[in-house]
Image (cartoon, rainbow, N blue to C red; front, side, top):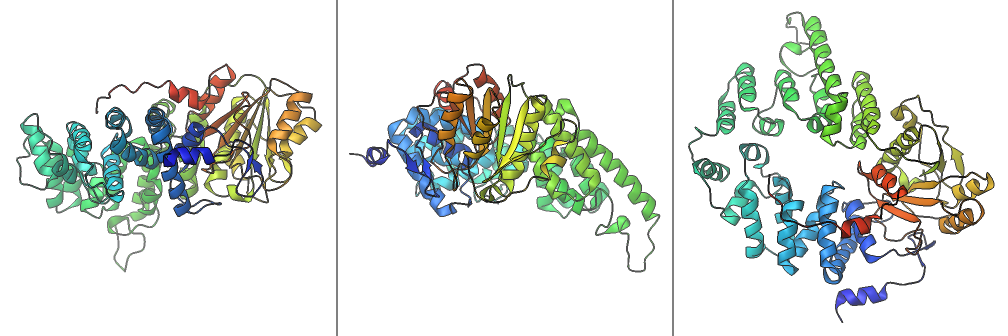
Length: 531
């Protein structure tokens, strides 16, 4: 009997316990695998350290590889494309490459989308003792490299990840289709080459030789050089940072607001040149006027970018990214557009019919990013229902969050704090006591009950006494592999991890859409063109 079959036989069919030794259930192997892909980033969590999570992840990947490799391949694609996860899908892809070459070839273009994916994939292969992965891998890498652009060569050829584009070219030996591509391959390998037909790379080489900011800014504009490239070859002055800010895509701008703030792009104390407010006895020309003007212009620029509803809709930036940026910056003038962006981002989400009860776990294990993200999601969901919902917080007690449809999501989320233990049955018990009739129950939690009665027992009571057709949605944001509800309950749906599709998924499911596993089973793995 194979190791995977033994693992499956050992999987109990009756209720088990969670990490706090409270009653829990096992979901299907496929569902547990989806949970792993969408929530597990190999990092320490409240109930498990990274080594334990890595071991569990490896076992789960191997189990799926033997039991259901087709589902595994589809789930890897779903996690990368819809769940915006990277490391777990890449890890699974590396295992797939050894056992299922055909499936690997179909899956690779959907999971390895950008050169940093390729770098991490190759690093994982080495870590698994697979070297360069053999011909099966090299064929896919060569196909991937056939789409290499100047932008890739500019942005991704550094060695910070341990595997550069030059390394990839040396590994796969892709055949160039023309002289320009041959020059690109030579360039990323570090060889002398003619850059006449590669104007962005020519601009980079000119930037390296530039002697002053005027020249540097000229070549940054001429080559449309990304900030990662510029900062890898020089220490930018505040003027150069201002230029880089205008070159950044929306997501890059959001991620680097804190850096731009520290560098003085939005005014205040900076480190050098004519913007220095406190000099060592040397008079600077009208610094106060200059700083005020620059500060206003740059703040206006960022505000316009971050509050452009149409651009935000196209960018696919998760609302929760704005939350992270909001907590990183100190300038109140930067926080205001971020606050507004959260409202605008959620405005495009679908409506949720019927009356909804929203329960947010605020127990101690939810502290930090889990609670920040959960709070924003719950408040946005409340606003999306136009107030036709309940929003309660719970630990071992239940508290009405008293949400407002008019106050900003961020300001309300800031008042929600973690505390106490976890009684997932408590909000259901209050729902029964208050005889509240709702069409769907949405709970945001890490599912680690450690006090009181079980969620499932109270859910059954609610359906028996109040509304037999009530649907339940568990948004599980942690990688622990035990669940509150058994898979036999066809009116309870699990959603794992965070993405901008969470509310869309709930909305479709309310209207009869199948669960995550069923949706993944229907995905088609057609060959993808590298772009």
